[in-house]
Length: 494
Ligand SMILES: *Cc1c(COP(=O)(O)O)cnc(C)c1O
Image (tube, rainbow, N blue to C red; front, side, top):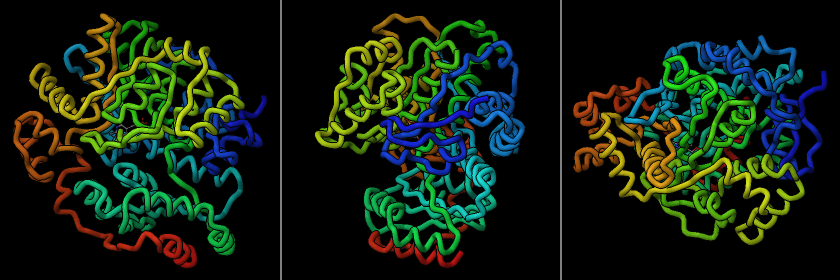
């Protein structure tokens, strides 16, 4: 059988196999890696009763070499079947007429856990398959949840170590506390004097530094990233679309084969893109409803076909969706036009002028599949309050963006199709805003956790219980200009 290969969205990358794609992360021409094979149609009936690990194995092995399916099952078992997640991994709850799929039940109470619990295992497996005996050093700059989820994912994974850089004044107190109390023999958390962009720029520089590369070669080390553009973060996310749909089938809420909508609070667009791939594989999805906060660049794109990043950047109460360049949209545009030279043209325009407009034929397909809307910060708080009052379900700020945008869509379209809302964070991740939304009072983050719990009786997720009293294990703070030197020292020390 022909080997499954990966190519660049921009057309100038030698074909890579799965292992090479995972290890390389990004295409050498600056594009993103995409499968160079047609998505197979999956038999829904054969998948519908599988548990999460077995379903993940069936979906993920579409993307991996044919002879390693049982190995993939082992990796999925480690990620989703070994107690880090609840037994049903992604519980689906009801908030009025909306089904809420909770993607935040993992080891750091963040949606990022869905992919970052598996990516480290993809990496070590890929190294083994390639006969690599170098140690992987993962570098990550974080402005919030990714750092913690990556730390937890790579913690004590053999053959890897991880260095996370965060801006000391640029993450929430709880996010910081989650990171600096991280346990594990191979983890390092370093505060940076500077903002997130400083940290991110320095890490990017490290990847391009020839000096550092020579040092890594000498010490048998391989630098890699846990960045959201790695195809290894996208593939695990396809699974929960199938799983949440089958949950509704099993509960008699939808008939097998009946089309549903998905509503997705979006930022970098990785979540939604995984859903689009699920649809290509035969999951009956009618519409994707793309929800944004005040940084509503995606809303404009889905309405007009113009992606224009020349606009103000807002810091909002749904910070994981504060984004101007939504990287994974490049993959969607590629899937819709199947023309790498066109994608390259758009991306060149984006680099040069900050914007691009897709052609009519791409726009036709966009309209068939996507609807979009956005909420401002006040609407987010109102939505949390209303949903709680009307349905008893407690939304976090990001999921509230999705809920509110869906309600707008429902009203405008009168679409009666059953809809699954992907919940990307626990309300306890953003307790100040959530508490304010339901009580009109403000408290600091830690007090808000307890007060929220008392008021609503919603359980505090296990990764956040007692977090205030956890032992601080990482106190290192360095200057943004010394990140590369710091990494060099760490490489020498391995
Ligand atoms: C990352 C994240 C998002 C955005 O997801 P994308 O895949 O980047 O679109 C939304 N909400 C939360 C809480 C997140 O952490």
